[in-house]
Amino acid sequence: MARTTKAKSKVEPSGTALTHIDAKGDARMVDVSAKPATERTAVAEGRVLMSKATLALIESGEAKKGDVLATARIAGIMAAKRTSELIPLCHPLALSKVTIDIATDAKLPGCIVRASVKVTGPTGVEMEALTAVSVACLTIYDMIKAVERGVRIEGIHLIEKIGGKSGHYRAGA
Image (spheres, rainbow, N blue to C red):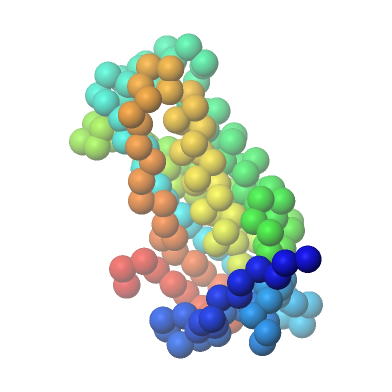
């Protein structure tokens, strides 16, 4: 059986070791059994850019497939809960709260999608927040692709992380 090529570098630009790579360079799930359960929150955001006409269709609630924003909110919540099934080395978590906020913005034009995810556990929820935003954005695309194929999904990123050993992170701070 052929062995896949391993990444040579095991160090991030910040100088800390990659946690999902062992000393031999093999992928591994991090052992969090000794970590204390603490409250952890993560917030992520992304944008769905489209024409003004498509945005107006969303805002009017007259899209053929139904309520675009409500469907995207539900999809984002479902995605957060299933992150460990999608991202191979993520731990399954009993999430205590998932909030998906979607604001329309005529200046873009488009939608700004923000997910906030909370858990009390031994590991963070950054991946759950990022997955929730990604799937909510993809759902908006799916709901409107019949009227506009050129919709763009952009800027998916972590806004904030609170809790855990590494403490508080805020983008741009």
